[in-house]
Image (cartoon, rainbow, N blue to C red; front, side, top):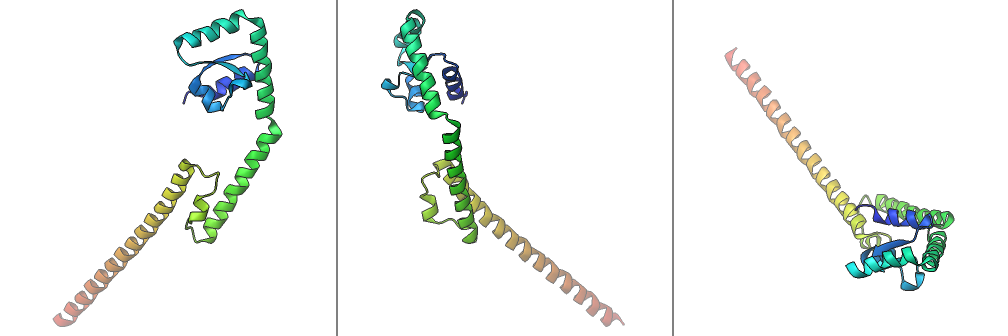
Length: 166
């Protein structure tokens, strides 16, 4: 996308109240009581949000303060590091399990709550690709054996012909 979530987060972290669409508010899981920004659901309400925030200093300050509190609560370094550490640990456990299963995924792994559809697709595709690589390696080995048998046969025939002409 256009990175609107980063732009909203940055504005809010700087104490600038934001006007956003309902879709953007939903992406952040904002509730009306969060009072983080003004949500416009159509052109008129969007315009009203802009005019109200610009004209009403108390509303501006309320949105600013609520936004800064939301940033402190949701963008806390320690909490973020804790969540990422957990995700990395779970991911490493999944990788170790897959390796211990000879590279095969199993249903229990696919039910891990952190595995989003996209990650599941990537892992499934990786498993399919590994099988294709294995199949291709077998085909190449079989073709090499055939080629070697042909070469051996050609040598045998050449030797037989040489012996016959003697």
